[in-house]
Image 1 (cartoon, rainbow, N blue to C red):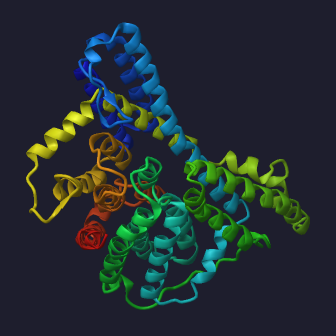
Image 2: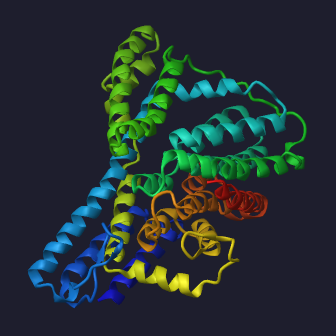
Image 3: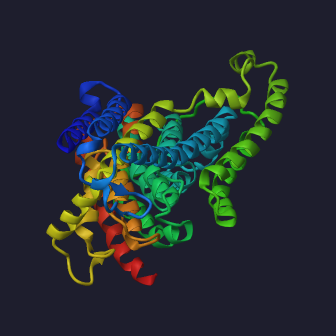
Length: 464
């Protein structure tokens, strides 16, 4: 039965990886895979020789002697445990996504366009790279990429130049998401799973992540495509809401407040996110009536939002397919973890993988090479299941350097291929970026940034 469960997981994983080829949204195989894996566990519960205790990160002693009722009760408790842990992540993401959509409702992100006041291509490159690095750490790398490429499309006419900018934005956004607990889904998983803390995460990863962004941007600034001045396209903008800037800073401040709230109260992060969402929603509802009265002459805008409160409108815009995908993949990985499959795989991996050197290793006997390969793997396949699997494979304590290296590798390694990260996939859709164009023009820059940041991490971890 274990072989059947592994086969179902591999087939589902393959369908997720080939999403663009088979034209089936990845949430569908994720949900089917999750349901079938747990159904097979329920049907074959009597025949399993072991069970993994997630609370103690070890195999449960005496599982083979349990009665049928005891095993069923244990399975139900384990399922509920994993659902609770997964729900913490999903509720957190729902809150963050809603705040971002409320900011967008008030055209808050258009305020960022005002930062671009130069026509020099290299300066614009650095402006967008730094904005992507900072913004992705606050509102996550996916949203930051969408916002910045949308702005890019308004000010850059030449598509060939714009594609290079988009490629560097992907690298910078993934690098920025790695050092923040709210910047990338995988980092959020490690943070909520109590593997990393905010202060240690920033301390370990800020410099490596910054170099991962800065080195490719510095090299790219010498490329011929970024020489000279840009022909900036002047686009007549519609009148912005007078609250756009206020809602931008309020929303970003509310998201940044979440880690602070957790440090003060020691409550799970989703509680702080719900508080932040409530505060932002209050101001959004108050400002919305002022917005309509101010723009009565703008019938198109009034009609567009006439029957929506800002919160209801924003809730209708969040990416529910992404939420369901995370539910499916995290619960499917939990099925493998519960049977001890990931635990045994981790032990065999650590025994067979050679060390890079006695002084160059992560955690208790976990080779740096393993984590680097995880980073490369995240460029080929989705990094969410990779990190979810690592949570079940390794049992190092909170803030062990292993978890920070995994956060860096999984977060930035995806930049090496256009399909390797959520930021890359959304950029691919918005700009119709060809896979092989990215591979030839951008991947080598991402690889250099990834390796430079990895070396920097190996140095910074010695400081803690």
